[in-house]
Image 1 (cartoon, rainbow, N blue to C red):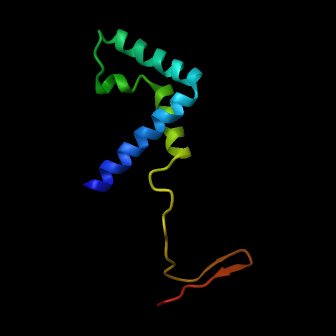
Image 2: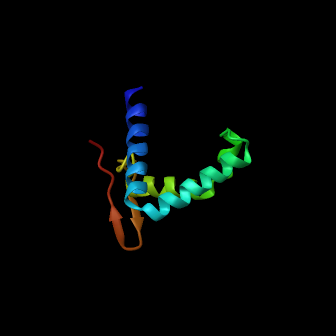
Image 3: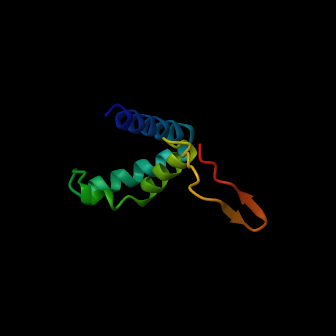
Length: 92
């Protein structure tokens, strides 16, 4: 529970940080959200979120810049050869 809460909180924090650093982008996001809310009679619905491609791209870019899980560790289960390079599996 804590890990899920923490990663979402940090993701939102970094998204807000990135928008705060880029006022021009922030204004474009604000205009897009306002237009969608106005078009839906002042309501923000799940369906209305599909009408915000610029906001979606901004959130994805924020996650790219500041990933919630920056490293995924993998362990080989067998030797791997890529071109002339061989990575050997070690069974500890």
